[in-house]
Amino acid sequence: MPISDYYYARSLVKGFGKSLFLINLQDANSDGGGRSLLGSVAKELVETGGSFLVKNVYYPEPFHYTTPQLVLTSIERNREDLGLQSNEQVVLTSEIAAAAQSVSVTRKKSLKLDIGPFPALPLNLNFSIDYDRMETIAVSLGAGTRYMYIPTDYLARLYRHLGGDASRISPNPAVEIDEELIIHRMVLARDFDVSFKSTEDFKGDVDAKLAAFNQLPEAKGKVTMQRTSQRTIAAKVSGASEYVVALAAIDWDDLR
Image 1 (cartoon, one colour):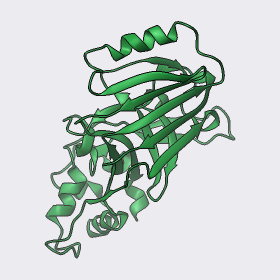
Image 2 (cartoon, rainbow, N blue to C red; image 1 turned 180 degrees about the vertical axis):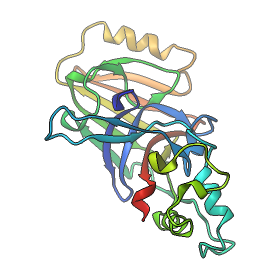
Image 3 (cartoon, rainbow, N blue to C red; image 1 turned 60 degrees about the vertical axis):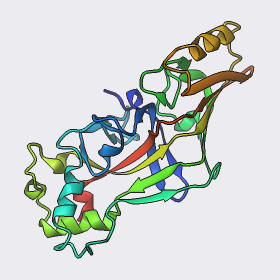
Image 4 (cartoon, rainbow, N blue to C red; image 1 turned 135 degrees about the vertical axis):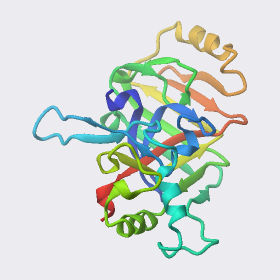
């Protein structure tokens, strides 16, 4: 599947590094992905560039490819050999203040250029939008947003401890981890705003479509959408659920 089926942008999260932003949000508690992707192996996919000037883009499929949190578990099992203290946290969390972080993506940096779901909605919701007419997508992360990550140093210690041989990870993986990616960073949020600014005015029936969307049982209490100008549609995501908004992955061989 192309990268645009999973992510709408790869952008810098200030103080956290470049991350891939999910088109369809994953509930943090979901079994197939969510928070449990941290320290897990994901299948590495590649999108080939159209010319020799365009490099191939490598990216993780945002689902478990092996036992969930396989690499994280291996770090925990080898913590003494890795020089980690018994009370030393392997997964670190940083919480940002309300409205302290915003990300804006221009069409030039967008990964998606066709009709697709409005960005950053929960997985079971869809409101189609034309990315070919996108001017910008802006995300404003609200109170309670968290950055979760495994320090690269801890991953590198595991690499050295195993002599770079990923097949020695326990429990023994059935796939070649050095051919896939390890998810080591993610952004989780409960409350945030997303706005999509178009290069053209939205058609007159968009208000009726937005009203119908807001009445969906799946949307109530989670998402509210409205047109804020002739060319801008905004979504407000809020409620009790925490979602994976963005993530980043590293190659095993890059840990050497």
